[in-house]
Length: 214
Image (cartoon, rainbow, N blue to C red):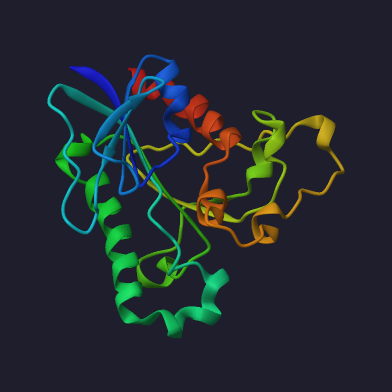
């Protein structure tokens, strides 16, 4: 059995990179991947959450799971457009979030610690309030370039450890920038806004990998 980390709705693979570097088998499932490929030691697999559960390959001993269900139709930052999006869009977004929860709590996830990420969203009303909240700037001690604000929520389970803030001392007194909300319209704006900050990624690994390796 191979120690494995699973990441759902993950295009970039940012969340699993520290785990891959530490020797874990890492698999990222997302609808934007084409077929199956391996880059930098990470496996990227096409998966449509509306069509079924991701299939974890045989021989995987899942030790950690993280999920990034799409927030386009749930984030309260876009509340003024909710009615125009219609019930189908809302239903699909809730279904994808539910797919993440169901996988994390399924036998396939092996009772591994898990986290599910979303910005401030209506999931807090439909399901339950998040367990943790952070800004990327909370972890500039791991990545200086992440000195920006974006309120982000985490729903967690099975012993997930939320890392303590680790802010770079050289940035003390400097206000985090607002690059996420200030991003101009473009074809890749959604991907830019949803990319996982590497500081948080490294902090999560540092807080959780010892337990996952046991």
